[in-house]
Length: 479
Image (cartoon, rainbow, N blue to C red; front, side):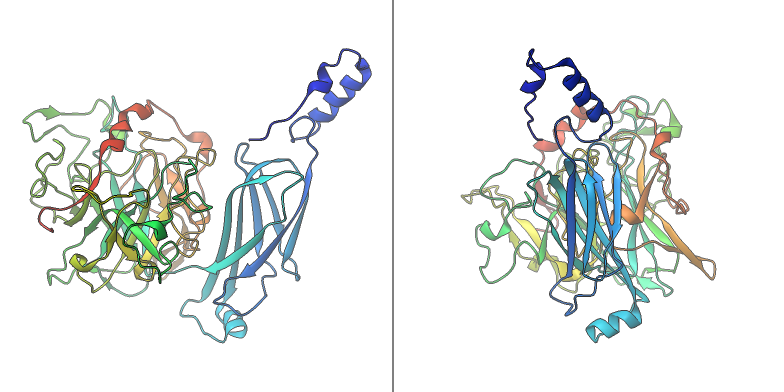
């Protein structure tokens, strides 16, 4: 943040009336005392894939990171929007533009498959003061897939009265009007820098500079054209021919148990919760992750439900499919015909020497990705983004924080012949809201929920410190 000098207020020779005038002026402004409001012009351009300067009508939103106050303006025919007397501070800047098929065809000569194409652009943690240069935002067309991530329950439930994080799940939805075969679908957590520390091995955005990773080819764009897996699982491609019907979803559980009821864990102990309303019933999940056949020390809560198919373990983080309760992950689904044994993999760019036990992270081409969602702890506590704008131009979060029973859930856009179509603008800030109580296969809300209703319980971050001790590793059955 900025440092301001107020020594003039301490000058005892200053007339009292002048001090009073300064205090009154400050009370009438949202800017810090002694800091003048700022005029800012935002310009927008299309990425290099669109040979057009047409961005008129795009909506620009500036959100103050600390106060969450929004300022909105539309882009004019010159590709600009002007903001006057903005309070100085740190802002998230987002731009969204939706064009119909005919307009896209007129501008690009390409007729898209989708009825509408949404373009997004973002700049995070933009410091706005009198010396700030007017920003230029590049608009990128979102990758719209028929399968979308509908709900992610990463926060877990109360550490005393709930199920901690053993009740986590991910829900995937068929947002199209055609059945989709899901055999072979990959579910991935994106790996990246979770610190805001500036080192020589990160880019300007603060994310790892993978071009510096040992063994990385010099003729590829390692940062923009690829993602890197923190963990990776796959729906078995075993010829079963599993089909997801339009408007239906599948739930992937960390452990497919009814977490509201007592169960016997892997050590023979009876485990129960004090308040069943805080957690979920995952006994009817469509898939689960079980690591007992691949590692020597799975969590005692990693119980294999014989009635629920297991995902194929490929690249493991921790002792179960553990989603970061703090919200520092990004979630990806993709498909490819390439065998994962052939995936290229590289060490963390900060690794300067290859040793026994060095982790090599699978490299996943962006072109394979069907859908992706970025999460953060909160607007005022962000880490470097892991996803490119082409995958997710924004982020989402749960307002109740870790162990709150909150989940993120995609909004409903409309209904077509009885089938709910979920919102998919390729910007999680626009597409997602939250449930105060996670619920597998819950109806998608029509409008964002109010954060004023959230109850924050025993959100003790100390209980997730152990995650920092875990390293990713290839599954024993895989390599």
